[in-house]
Image (cartoon, rainbow, N blue to C red; front, side, top):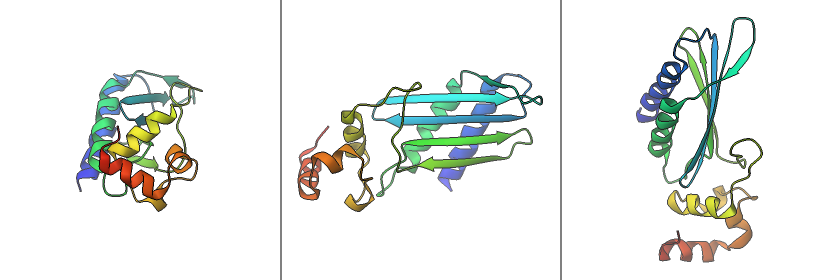
Length: 150
């Protein structure tokens, strides 16, 4: 129930960020690893034109949503919401694919490692491309977590 409340708050924050532009659909994707977050938000007009906008309130709401959704299975790398003019919305979450920040910038491997250390998940749920799977064995990762890897 908490995640649903935070989803609703995130969708509302995105609507508030638009500040009166003539939109019919809002779209936003938020990505986060460690202390780095990135937001790509846009609205679509009745004519089908797409316009990017700054979504500072929604970015804060996404950060809270991610924190609330973290559990023993880790946490998502990115989330996308689509909000319709009637107020309905739909979220999708990416737990398995690498993310990009600001276009083509790839996050550093260290960011993925630090994020997984902060939000651990079972070894078999870590994607095969993840730097932890490349640089650690299951045993050495468990030892690094027990030691307090940052």
